[in-house]
Each structure stands twice: as C-alpha cells, then as structure tokens.
Image 1 (cartoon, helix red, strand yellow):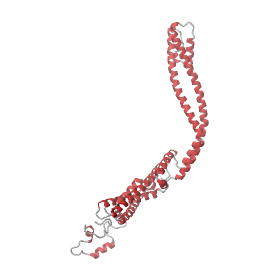
Image 2 (image 1 turned 180 degrees about the horizontal axis):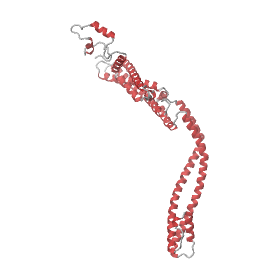
Image 3 (image 1 turned 90 degrees about the vertical axis):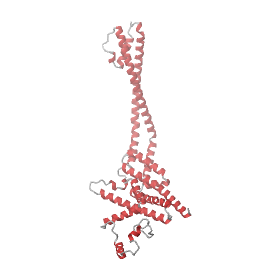
Image 4 (image 1 turned 180 degrees about the vertical axis):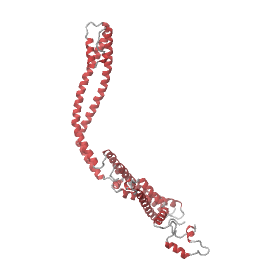
Length: 391
C-alpha cells in the first residue's frame, strides 16, 4: 500500500468518525425537539435551557424555605396512615370479640333459663359489654358455669379496652388532621408557586419533570454543552444541518467501497468534491421533498403539521440525507429531469446547445461510434456530460 493511499484512507476514517460524532449530537438535539413539539403545544420544539435553569433555582429556593413544613406534613401523613392501619385491625378484633361474647352469653342464658328480650347478636359493643357484666355479676350462678362466666368477664374487659383505645386514637386523629390543615396550607401555597413557575415554561405541569430530566441528560451527554446549544436552535436550522451532514456521511459511504476495490486510487480532491456534492444534493433533495409536502398540505382542510419543521421526524430527515449522499449522481439527474418537465421540456430531450452541437456534428466519421454511444463505451476516457462516473 502506497503512502498516498494510506493517507487517503486515514482521512476517510477521520472524516467518518467526525461525521458520526457530530451527527449523534444533532440526532440527540433534534430528537429532543421533535418529542418536545409533540408533547408541549406551542413550544415549536425549542427550549431555553437558561430559563429552565432559572426556574430550577427558584424551585429549589422554595423547597428549602418550606423544608420543615414538608417534613412535618410527611410525618403527619405517616401518623394518619398508622392510625388507619390500627383502626382497621381493631375493628376486626372488636368484631371477633363481639361474636364470641354474644355466643357465650346466649349459651349461659339458655342453660340457666334466663329470659332475654333481645338476642345478644343484635346488640352493639357497648350494650353487649353491659349485658355481659350484668350476667357475670348475677348472684347464684352455678359453679359449673364458672369457666364460661370467667371467659365472659375477660371478653367484656377486652371489649371495653378496645373501646377506650378507639376513643383515644380518634382524639389523636383529630389533632393530626388539625395540624395537617395548618401545615398543609403552607405546603399547598408553595406547591402552587412551584406549579406557576413550571407553567412559565410548559403549559402542562405533568410534562415538566420529564422535559427537565431529558434536558439534563442531553446536556450531560454532550461535551462543551454543544447539545444544549443545539436544542435552543430553530428546528428548521437543525434539520437543514442534519440533512447536510447526513449527505456528507452518505458521500463517505459511497467513497469507502471505491477506496477498497477501485483500481484508480481515490484522491483528496475527489473526497472534497464528493463531500460537497453529496451535501448539495442532499440539501436539494430535501428542499424538493419539503416543497412537495408543503404543496400537498396546502389543500384546504388539510393538516399542515407535516410542513412544520419541528414536526419533521429526525430519522426521516437523516434517511433523506444519507440516501441523497450515496445516490448523488442519480438524484441530481432525477432533479434535472423533473425540473425540465416542470419548465415545459420533455424527459430525455437534450438542451438546445447540445442539440445544435449534435446537428453540426452530423454523421460520425467512418469507424467512429456516435457521440452518445462513445459516452457509454467502456474504452471511452473523456468527460461524461451526464454527470457521475465515467466508465
């Protein structure tokens, strides 16, 4: 391998790595703008990171000022949750004790033949406790029923203790709710201020945290805050820059196989010319594609979102650039043919100057092929008038 070919390969590799790096930053910034335009109405995909930083500073200040109240409110909420759990467990225990106590009272009264105006199962906890104590304190109870009577006393005592516990916890709950109202008012006011700050950037407060986290990730992943600067640029500018660089990337993809397999060495001049040609062709094809979409969306009642630069999918824009960079020759011819048709010409009709030249040439000299066939002749070494590579 010659030194010149090695240098050309090294230059292609450096240009490829540089194009990939810059394109990754462009893709990240443009994807962020595309997502922002979809989820935040009226943003047009642009975001002021300095404004976002100021808002975050003010939010942090408000949070620091109300840190004690927020901590106290959290403790109150945890206390209320604890009381709710205890109340649920206590209700379950009261139900079980009442059921067992009512069954024991009914059994004793039936055995002793004590008349009852109301079934024990129909009594509430207070009435059941009173009836159990009245039965346990009744004189002349048989000794054989002492174990059941003792169980009734214990159940009545437990039912009374649960009732007192319920009253005490209800009092504690009222105190916590009163504190929650006092502290919660301060916290709610600070929350309203925070939401007001967020709405200065986005109309939907629920989207703020997601946008903030994505913006932080973009800034952290881009060296020298390049990604942050790109996010604040206009979407049309980023899309145009993306299609240009993707056109250059497509041109490099075109040159690599030529460098590896073509007999004629690739030169530095060819690299530069092909890069510029790929970028220009990508831009021209991008303009034609956008003009077509704009013409279709101009129909009355048609959605015009497709013509908005912020709503253009960056992967579609990148695909246009890469394809145009690789197929620059064919696309240039295609644009030329479409332009000729639009301006009134016919496809395949040579320009007037070329037609005059062919008329003056007349019949080819004996043994020499016509001019059109000489271009496609494998042995022809002149300039291809149609562009692209000369066979």
